[in-house]
Image (cartoon, rainbow, N blue to C red):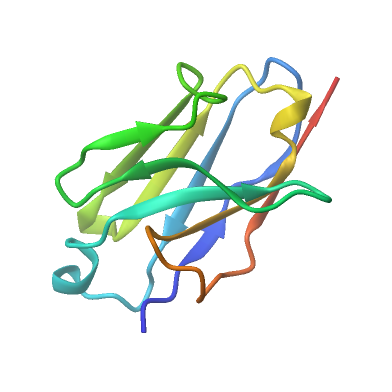
Amino acid sequence: QVRLVESGGGLVQAGGSLKLSCKCPRCITSVFNPLDLGWYRQAPGNQRELVALITSARTTNYDDSVKGRFTISRDNSRKTIYLQMNSLEPDDTAVYYCNQVGRDDNWGQGTQVTVSS
């Protein structure tokens, strides 16, 4: 079972930056490296949405709402993916989760990001 743990959220003013981390502490590299992973977010009253993904081959894709502002990356040696978020906006306020792309179960606790105007 792949268990992912998110961290790095917080309160930031509009225009600021945050970097989220998602680690698989119990994964061995042969399990982690082939995973296609994504960052998702869920704002109050909204459905969870995929904002960025990175494949095992390091191909990336972004939702239009975050293109040019967010960057997803991975460090397989640390069994971790990251989400660098710049030029944050109040609409980015949400709980951010990571998960394997295509899975709709095995969600972690997430990390809260709050952007004040």
